[in-house]
Image 1 (cartoon, rainbow over the protein chains, first blue to last red):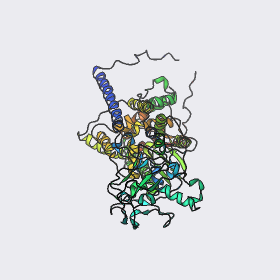
Image 2: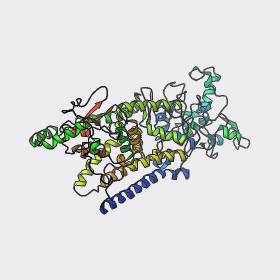
Image 3: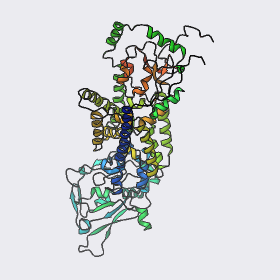
Image 4: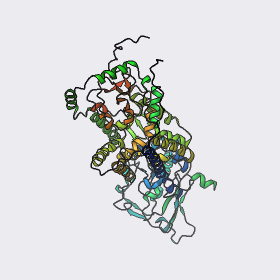
Length: 282
Length: 334
């Protein structure tokens, strides 16, 4: 190098007292900011640990802890659902913020897409791609939670429209419109014995279609191997016409029965802690 | 010092390196010497400023792009046209999987299992933003960036009135956040960061309707308005760091030429990440043409404001911002 290199200066001049204080303050502020930010993010644990409001997850959802780990919160499952059964959770749902759930009483999954579109749409496998047909779904398990409310168990029929005017739920009534789900309220019923839960069960409907030689989408794989729900005679019924809904191993927990149950609150609900597999093993 | 390493070091939060005289090539030194000798033609400079006043060409283009991209998501869903399904965290554009790199990273770390769709989506987006400049995502797509930009206007107005504070933090805090959120995702199995990500919250709110989580975004904006300018993007957001790293070697960038620069510093005042523009300070440039570092969001505010066109966009191989420097006027003899 040339000779006119300036005399070596101290690389880092000693900071003035004022500057050093400012640097230290800035450091402490930054640590506080980091602490605050991470704390805010960790607040998401509170609802998780408190198991705040467990909710039904869409078809194919992994076990809850794996589901929360893998869901990227994009809502593609929401967008493809023909009956708009899937909603996204909000702030108070912890790490569930932005994750999909189904409020079956408002709008159940009725499998009107046939092909599990939500599963196909999921980019991360949070809704496992290992299932392809409605009967493979394990959302939960239906349960007659309020037998005293059930019309069939009292031997009562049902006449009129399901639920009140505020109810916006949709359902695909195959025999009326194969392609478009209709508002449940658009249908009028006159049933000597209420069997709304059974006649709206997507699994039962599929079994009937298959029995008639017309499997959904012409695909025999769509045929469920097991029944999901039926009305059975009661052992000790005051009324001989009374029947009780019995949930079978084919139930996938879609919640269609809960949605259309005309009593308030519904006599039949989906228990999200159980499914056909866990029930059998226990 | 190696320019790429310097760019990455700044991204992680180090203060810009002030070049020693021996690090500045002779032609650049000569250029600076010439500037010292020549008196600035104030009238001419004033005329240039006058011409650039109200120039918002790139800002307007960027705002339109940002709004169009975000509205495409909304329109696709609301009218079921299926152009871009999903939200900014993950989507399918005309059938192609796309996954936000930071969200995908959080999911991979938390879930510890990657399905093929996510690999495809991540690679697609990686290539896209490598080509388009990494943090270009921030200023041209992220909905929080736009709202924070508007809030910044309010902040500056209040600051000048003495109502708002102007607190700064160490830029390395963002790196700390990035590491902590990565570790938290891996250790807890939850995508912890997504809980507070205003990008995800806003994108979903636009598409699927307002949520309580918007209150958090509101709090962030209030903090930025009254306490610290652009705090989220500058000191916190790990998404920005992720995309910054993607854009380190990107061909799309802002290029600086010190030749005509009057070193007034308007660009640094407008900039979200002014440290990347420290090369525009007199005596800091180490070349006659310099790419601006990876932390740059390619927002173009500096390109709009620069009266001497010393800062321009370039796409290496397609479009050169500044003409090649002339050979040094004097040959240096050994």
